[in-house]
Each structure stands twice: as C-alpha cells, then as structure tokens.
Image (cartoon, rainbow, N blue to C red):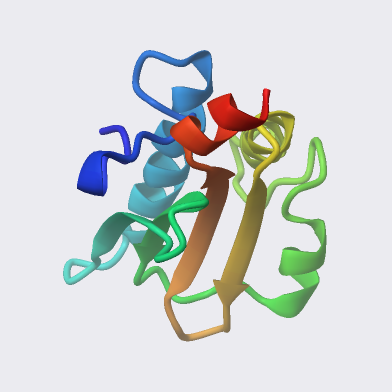
Length: 129
C-alpha cells in the first residue's frame, strides 16, 4: 500500500519499517467504527500538486474525538480503550517525525476523524541528501 500515484513513492513504503504507522492508523479506525454497522474507513494517498510531498489520510465515521482527548491523543500511555496501552499513536507520531513528516488530526465530536500523514516525496528526499 505504498503511496505511488504518478510514480512518486512515499518514504513510508511497505518495505520500510515505518510502514507500520499506516497499519496502526487503519486498525484504530476499524476499532472506532466497530460498534456501527454502517461504519466506514477510508484510506486516501496522493502526492501534493507541487510534487514535494505526499500524504496519506485515514478517515473513519466512528463518531469523532472530543477536544480534551485530542490534546492528549499523541502522548505515550494515554488511551481511551479499556485494554489499550497508549503506545500506538505515540509510536505513529514518532516514526512519522523521524522521517521528517507531520501527523495531523482533524475531528469533531459526532463527525468523522481524519489522521493525515505528510512526508517528503522519496525522490525529493534523495535529491536533498
């Protein structure tokens, strides 16, 4: 599931150890929609028009995330799940940032939640090294 539209490969490719953040975000989205028969998870990946970066978004219809939870959601050991460890999203954020990327959350209670990973396109990253 690497981001390869238009021949641009993301640094978070399937062969990279950093691929697991995408899996974590998708797993979280599936868990967020598990109680809803009509739940939906959408994965979108695309290069930005400038070709400098690529993004992958994981969106779910799980009912949104409250502002107080959003403030803590990327902290280690913070969880809202009974059996959660609070390590998943902290791990995702760390890996994305180690690849000079950004992880953003857009959510409102009662609405969909979207996690967006933005990274430099691999060919652009190689040119700057």
